[in-house]
Length: 345
Image (cartoon, rainbow, N blue to C red; front, side, top):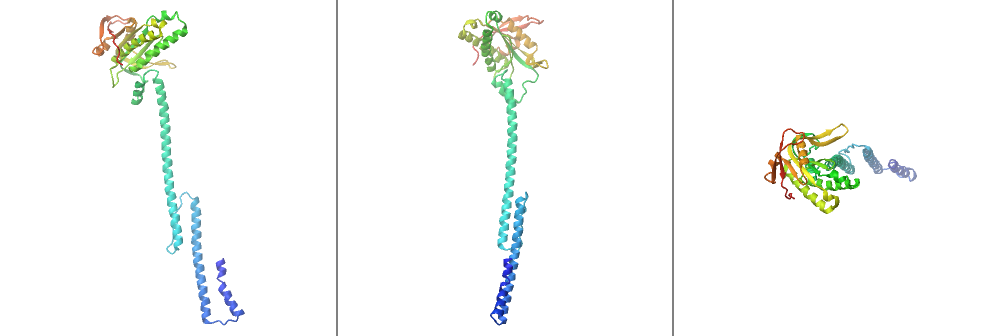
């Protein structure tokens, strides 16, 4: 608007010169005034064009600031260099903004992926911790690690060849009837606390406790000794540990004696019981024979079956007992007595 008013300034000067100062209008003076007017109008046109393009750019910038998908500014060939530089700078800013958005989306996607992985790892860790807690009640750390590493479901029902070990304290009923209940529980806890780690050391599975009797199951695995060898080694080590416990504790502990029965054969291992209460255990004739061997074993004896003997005879010295008639079993079985030596460390 001010520029428009300035356009009339030369005419006001001409009117002042003609009417106030009485200056004669010459051809040269008229040309100067005309040229001045033309220049002023040309300048006004240029300013208006620049202003219009500048307002266009300003509106685009304002709209782009609110638009999620901004468009780059376009220029015309006849635009001033300053306008083209301004548009180029704005377009460069748009490009950087789009790159920043893309990088932000990529980072967000990676963060979501990491969060999903972390959530899956946490669930897997909780599940594995629960499995470890459950399995650790029955087997040692090495077996737990192997089961989890292989992805096996340790509690599936399975038929397999296994070696079953029974160990029972001789005369414990007579011994405990002269003891306070608290002392009986304390003695059993000390006894089992000594025996169970030995079973785990030789990769056995603790099946159950029945009063002062314990049952363990040994199965072959890809590494180390075969199951019957490990079962006998565990039995020998248990007898040695009991002798050490008797010496260290004295008193009623010195009267503790254990008999051990071991047998190898086909068993079914799985969940047995009712809908509300199940035990994970091994069943079958092999288990029954091992239990009968334990019952006939005298204090400090380890009696094993024929298959166990055949697998272990090259490693462990044994003495043949001969045919044994077992309770509630028609056919006799061959029994062997382990000649105890120190179990391997």
